[in-house]
Length: 74
Figure 1 (cartoon, rainbow, N blue to C red):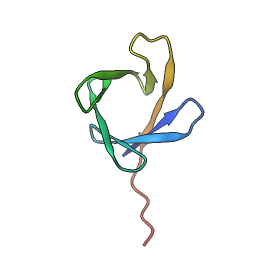
Figure 2 (cartoon, rainbow, N blue to C red):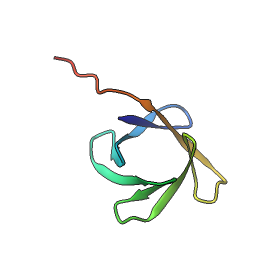
Figure 3 (cartoon, one colour):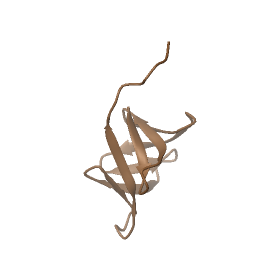
């Protein structure tokens, strides 16, 4: 699992494999190559390295964090 963060470092989503979820666990899109797409397969953001950018590259949206394991409290 990889967190998806805005420019301020606040997590607003996460990637599990190629599936994108809100922090509430609702599916919201997919990672398709170098793009994040919505559930209808429309391109939303472009991924450059770990950085998320608008499709035209004019705005930085945020970044995708490193791979982490879920932290379960048992």
